[in-house]
Length: 365
Image 1 (cartoon, rainbow, N blue to C red):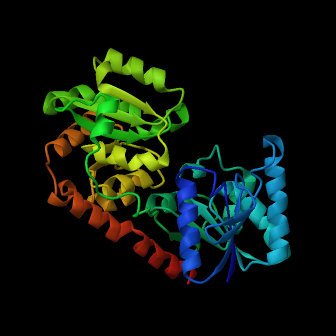
Image 2 (cartoon, helix red, strand yellow):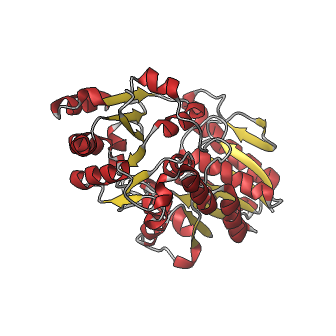
Image 3 (cartoon, one colour):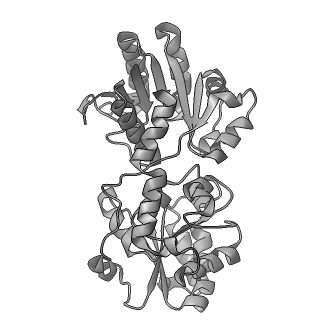
């Protein structure tokens, strides 16, 4: 088939949607489909074997209009069999494009993009009108089914995957520990999140609140938070008030290439989220052999394979978060969680690229 995959970006744009878009494009290409990528933040030209169009070179004020025009143009030129949008913002544009090129439309839903505040009438109409909807988790699928006019037979689940060439077991990065001021006897709890009020659902403040209990149970601990944003000051003050100010490390922005070492440094990766569509970071951490803790109220449940790959707790209960992390630090739980090679192998078998491409084949083959 001729397929166009439209996204916020694949060559320039960061985050989970970019990662999902890249992996989906690779899976479609492996099946022999002819794939053209369109990314709002991208520049035109070839990229990793795919032709790419995008408006990344345009000034900010004109970027969206330019990209919309490109989508219309390339849909008319290529006459694709299918247009896949990996962000719901692009759904209305795809629905318009199909009227003159006849393409089938597939929209991907992640999680928070289904919040009422985000779902305009045009986006909801696009969801209702698309021939196929992909949800990244069972939780996201249930949210789709809760919207009016959603037929269950149009919704399929396609979980995220991860880059197994980058995220794998390795030696503990001693130099990184020294740079962050981690002492020889200190255990490390890691989380990754943008520090902004809109991202607070990821539970980084509840990790700070849980630190005193964790330290009483397990001794010296450092909470390392990778990410930057305006919430950093609030977290520092919260840690000070709780008496754990010197045990909080705000690492700031970390390039993608450096992330594996942060996972390898950690004794536990924790993100007690309440609104995560899936959570690729859980896969990345486990692929590096790090035990994980997640909330039991959102798509994180899928990422942990229903609790088979890691610990699930009530993400709103600080006491449960603290007790769950303490159990992981003590090595309490299935043996696979604490054998780095075994945990990495288990997550690879369940969510690695081979498993992902098999799912893509079942949907688009």
